[in-house]
Image (tube, rainbow, N blue to C red; front, top):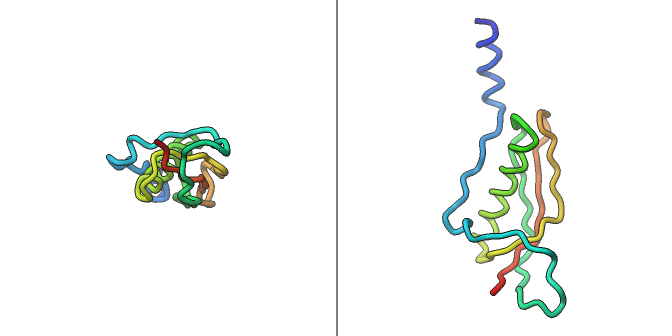
Length: 104
C-alpha cells in the first residue's frame, strides 16, 4: 500500500509522449543545407518539454515529436537539430532547438 501511495504522485510527474500530428508525419531530419540548396529557412524552433520522463529515451522521443509538430505548423517539412537537453529523471524540463526548413 505504501508503494502505491508513492507510485501515484510519481506517475503524475512523469512526462507523456506527445503524439505526432498527421501533417508532421512527413517532417524529416536533414543535414544542414548547403548555400545552393533549395530549402527555405523558416526559423528557429524552441521546445520545452515536461519536467520529468521515465527515461532519457522517452524524453528524446517526446522532444523529437514536439519539434516535428512545430515544424509542420510552420509549413515546413524538414529540420536540423541544433540543441537537445535531456535530464531524464530530474526536475528540470527537457528542451530542444532546431532550424525549420521547407524543402522541395
